[in-house]
Length: 496
Image (cartoon, rainbow, N blue to C red; front, top):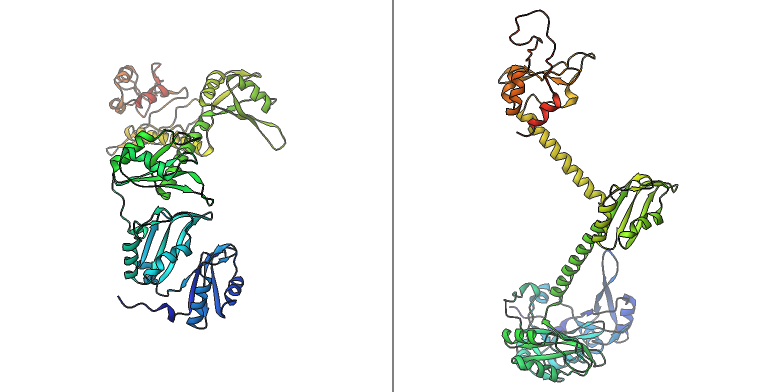
């Protein structure tokens, strides 16, 4: 790895953690009080134009940049301490994580400036930051050295040491994408909440030590140093952690405390994911209950308004809302909606009032459906009908829909149309004006057993209308009285 450029040779600074309302002019004025400033570039979002809360400043000489860094680093501007470091033009160096350390379990009073003063004796510190939320220390931070050797020396010397009464933990910083997922059983940290302000970290450690060796115990505190009522306990073994969780969850600890909650400590993103899933489940359950509690009511008398509709349905439970739909002129459309507090009340009203008479009209009551859901159901229903008709006509070529038959003059039979079977033309089933069906000989092979008897007893007519086996060739005979109606012949086919 090539040697890094010395910071003393650079004349550009990176300024981070800026207040969102700081302008480039204000930033220039703040630095111009110390040294002349060549240029300022405050970075903003391309779409919204809002400040990204960091900037780059160019100076006329490296000595000016060094002086500005020494005088203004961690000083407040609009109430926020600025974090200043030499600008790194090479992104590979910045993103490699070389010399970067992660420090946790920090005392709430330790800020970025104090953290840098602790680590600076091991080498040149490029950047130092303590994570904050709402102006409060989150108990961890990051330190980046110029050289990897300096970071290793600080890690070996300060890891597991006590600073401000707390045992700090230091490790090499890893990007989130490089961190290995934790194995089952490797999580020994417990999250504890609902204890009183009189509970100290020593008392917390003592109480949890009854169930195994405790590695660390910490209570989260506010800016005034008072307990926030929750903390973390870390065990050396997962068995001890599980035993403590089982025994102490729901127990009392300290004066004025509630029942303790003890559970597995989770990362922020894991906790947010679980809360989102829980919220989605609750929302889905609520929506399902609302759907089942909503009734659609139609065929209402035009004199019915919201209050009368509510009064009529309120005998079955608590009516949350009742609405009669109206035109723009205020006239009723004859239907409305009633929402109950529970699905059980809605079902009770549905069972009693559907088909009942209200103001001289038979009510139609059903569970309300969204327009999109109703359209999907109707589309599915009609698709099934079309599929059934297609299969029916494929199995029975003599089947035809009613609109394909052309009727001749009143009193005359329908004109049959030929269809092809194995290359031979056959007529459609002919019907007379009374709807009676007459079977040609070829159709005997398509009949059900119960139809075969009727077929054999009927007078069968050919295309000419002459009865089969008739000795007379003059004219055409009238249809047989025992002929089946078309509807009686057609529907049993659907049972095959």
